[in-house]
Length: 590
Image 1 (tube, helix red, strand yellow):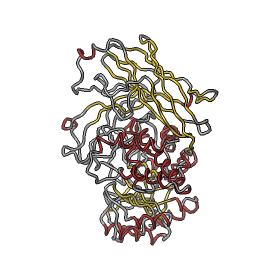
Image 2: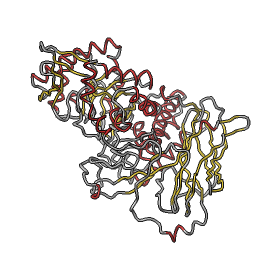
Image 3: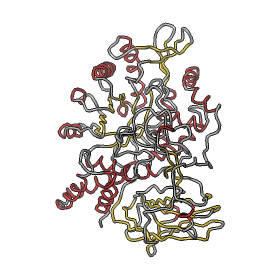
Image 4: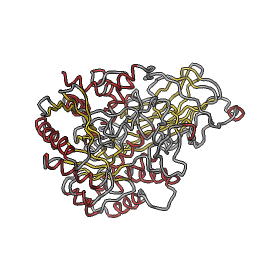
């Protein structure tokens, strides 16, 4: 208990700072004001009565302008496999205030067969403040301390959990529709409708249908993609204003992390030192393991929080494949421990190659190895690093191997021939490339080869101002480039007020998180899951085509996937929606 208190003391600033600020909204909240130019009242006056129409999932509809790019048909046609999630977007827009607006969905029917209304979810799409790429248009990295220096605007992204909303005059209100196709449903065409109504809004109904293909997408725990979206439990504690690692903290995290598991997540993010990334996020990461230097100079390690977090993620959430432990080479080379002799938390300043570094990490890793083996987690665990100078990474790998030669190591960084053989999990930037022979040999050895995107990519990305289709495109690239999976550093490293403002002091808006408190999903996150599903469907069809010697279909699929690669002299922003549509059409053939 004494050492758990020390652990909590190290992270106390997260909880204490939350208590000193105003309460963060979890239910109702107000969006910020958009000062960008928009349609005038004269244009809105042409909207004589509220209108309800199908839109496109590829469009973020502006809040204060009459929507364009709507579907001319009153019927929406969707396609998907059994077990798949499909979605659509409708748009309500009005020149007058609408009160207590609600949504209603019918069951989808095909003769005596039914997809129940409980399999259908509807969301009012809310608006969050965003900014833009860097002024040169080449990405979103770099400091942004002054929001006034960046072109900011409200964009549609948040999928709100409220069941009723007020729609103000001269406003566009998008509506997101998600259908979970049951795994045991009969293939065929199912029809249903979506209705919007309010106190001063007569019911308006849109018809839609889903053509269910006679193929089965397995449930998320069976998906093969190695999805690694980093979790930040410290953000949840701050936003929910609860004590770190308390029951209330885990209760708050449970629905958030279940959203992640439902997307096919494979990796648990753990921090094994204080501020592994130098406090780059709004809520920095503390160490989940307390290091205690005893009076006699020996070391003791308290794994209470680490164990609690990992057991929660494995047993309650269902993410079990891998545990990544960050990091052995932090951004700031400063390493914490509790010193019993002085009753203080102290820091060692050292670097890879120094004897102090070797002693600090060597003693810990030997003990950590024993603990992991005792828990049955050793084979799942990697000691994780980000890109650092070559010599530093080689020194760190040497320390890890000396502690236990069987330790697995992961790296998110550039491809290095000198390091590749030592890395079980190697994740390289989007614009880099694995040598094909190396990737094939790694797969034969059971190693993991993935790629990542971050603030550097202008396209594809998942900033709040990025095209929604870019998230899907990114995951299809995973299949096109024959990777095992995809990494992004930020699932829920929330900004100060993430529901209202996705801008941050570093990086382009939305770089820090994909989902919102509540928890609320986002257009970005739903489109990412769409891409994950496409990855799995591609894998299934490739296997089938190979077994059946369906060479023509193999070539068709290869041709479609060949475009989802970097370096081509095309305007991806312009053609990405059509590329994704054509691939979906192929995957959803009968």
